[in-house]
Length: 219
Ligand SMILES: [Zn+2]
Image (cartoon, rainbow, N blue to C red; front, side, top):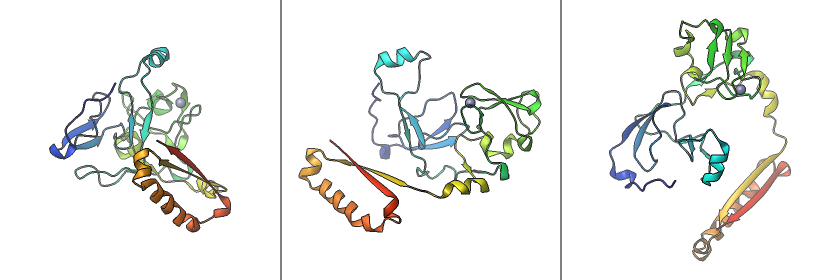
């Protein structure tokens, strides 16, 4: 459903929004200070639907687009955290679900005194790697929960282990440039200016022999 139209965000004092399972994220038209309490800030990821049916047929019948708007390096605002917390898993790398590769997150459910966990995405029961083991309390909460950002926050950075460096050598680079070519953009010569700007930086591409560029135009 279309969101209601709010007044300009500049006309509002900031509201405080806590990202958890209870509250839906407010419109980004509202000036807001967001706190990550286990779910990522909507500045980084926002769903087109806040409530999703269990039945996929109902989602299809509603004809409401279901997608995610993802902005990994979104700017944070004053009053929010200064930087994204960093998780260091040592040489063994981040813990992930064996089946769906979901990264460890605050909604992994640890069981059997911390030796097993259930993936919150696919429900697979996984064994906790020996290096990552930590005992749990009677509520199945790991005792190191508040020392580990990956168990507290929806958004965290991961310090890449040495074995990941092997994959850093990029063989081919693909760049996709989307340019609006509506009547207004063409008549105002903005599209032409964009193409001119793109052309001016083509010679500065680091490895042109390994780079492929695609253009998408839309109106
Ligand atoms: Zn999984």
